[in-house]
Length: 485
Image (cartoon, rainbow, N blue to C red):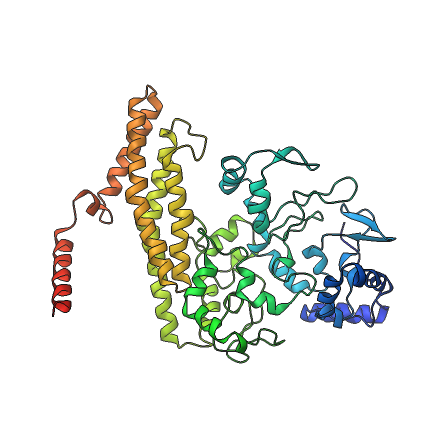
């Protein structure tokens, strides 16, 4: 059930609040701290002093929005508990925040961020739950057990499905959790505190790259590391005191100009664009899948409103951010470079690799079980780790991640691990007595021959184009002449 509106606000102010929220989507303060919140404050400033101090430094405090306004619950809410004669819910969901922050929540709920927990059941979770984990982690909500690797890993970034126990408490496998796509007991998806940590709910913290780094780092999505390598990240580190992260009005080019942060490019205001909480509205490639796609394609698959916003519009949105500091030629040429890298990865490695992976499945001894053959591991790491690093590196101008941690690793895995594993699988299938596996191996061999004989890969089988060989020879001679002075 939807939690009740702020009935404790006087009627006239309630009407004003409603009109203002409709007009601007922004929160307006209350005339005074409510009786219910004051009771919470009197206790928590003794028992939970750090929380009280964080709240005291927040805009919520200055707006007289206290504990009860966020945590209030109806008695029949699934996660409602009685706490010192107050009916509250421990989890504050986007639906709760939306009572005041309607526009922000609407944008967030329409974004990929809020859908992060839909990873549950994917191959990532097969890894965490089966390959890496077991079912030894048992809780009241999971009497059959769960994987501690998933609980402590995947779920803490992507979000868990919060389970409410019969006594109103939250199952320890699913709480605490601030995963960006957390599935809340009121049916909403997402967690505002993933970026705006409670109880300060600081905009400055959400603007800082370290906040994004809780999830956007590591071998498969190292955006934070890429940012730190880039000229943008270098500029931020050198000028952090000048970025004015605490400024109420935070417009790039006006309030700061030494460097952008993650929020600058993907969310924050420009001179012509307002803040957005849909982080996909300035992205013109979705580099998460094995083969990069345009964002409206992935939005359509998830039923998001962004399906109606073409990538060209999103790119223009991002270009407006870039133009706050760079000229038009610089921005246009960057995107030519970026597109070139994505197309290279897609066409040379991703599309043929994906086709080979599909054919390899039927040739495996256990076709329905993932990660049981070298082919599975090689393909997974090629696209999920190395291919993403290359694409993300190019998208954020991190040359080392684009090349040495990106396309170099992609090529090394493709030629030294993936192709040999495919050949070994073909051999194994032909040596089996299984006619279906043998037929599948024949199809796989035909496709592998087609791929390796293509212009992108024929060098690997000693068939480099003579014209290309001549160009390489000339380049080598010029190199020697240049440096052997």
